[in-house]
Amino acid sequence: MANRVFTSLQQGLVLSVMLGAIAACQSTPNAAEDTATDAAPNPTTEQSETATTDAAKAEDADAATSTPTNSADQAAQAKAPKPQPVPELPAECASPDTQTQMNICAGAEYERADVQLNNAYQANLSTVSGAQADQLVAAEQAWIAYRDQYCDFVQGQYAGGSIQPLIYGTCMTQLTQERTALLTQTAPTQTDLETTDAALNVVYQDLQDLLPPPAQDQLTDAQLAWLDYRDAHCAFEAGDTNVCLATVTALQTQNLQDQVESRSL
Image 1 (cartoon, one colour):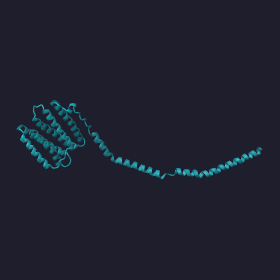
Image 2 (cartoon, helix red, strand yellow):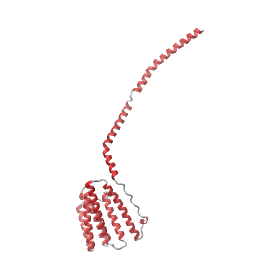
Image 3 (cartoon, helix red, strand yellow):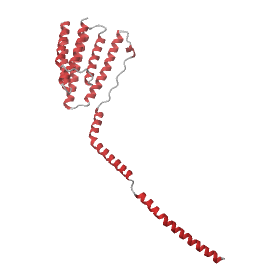
Image 4 (cartoon, helix red, strand yellow):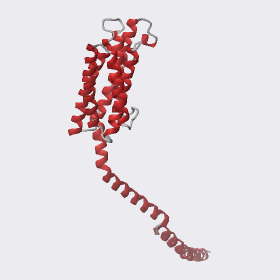
């Protein structure tokens, strides 16, 4: 009995070994196939990775090429001053009902316009250098001289009256807004210098005919200051000089026409 059991165990062991060998032989090709599949590169993935790498290299090349421009832009932004906040008008300026309030509000309007002009001027100044910066500074100084002389002339009609501060503040605001429009290039553009210059001469003479001698002298001085300003501004401005001259001249023509109408009442 023991010999028979031992013999059976031997036979079972041999059979198990044989079955294991057969199973191993059958599984080997599959394992090799799996290994080959893992090792073989995926053409789609490889192309995608290559394209991504090439795109990254292209981006790096573009970034390297654009660095000077970006640096220049950043330098310009750093140079440009932060705009000053424009002050709010006093609450009573929504509907001023006394002369005093109107005078105060005219001054407040000018303060707002002055801040806006200063912001525009500083923004322009931050974009230029050398001779062009000098031209801009010279034009601004010439404009200030003209503004002061012209508004002194305008308010002279009401010298000593309660309305004089209102007239003066309104004049200062108007000229300041015109200057801002020129610096921000939002003023209506004129192209015919000959026509606008002729119109200015006519209205200037009409105004002179309405004035007493002292006011005539004031207007002459203001107009000479304006000519200096106009020429200085257009020396700074790039582009067609005649267009610039015509545009500034048209603004002054309207200013003088307003005075003709005011003093004809």
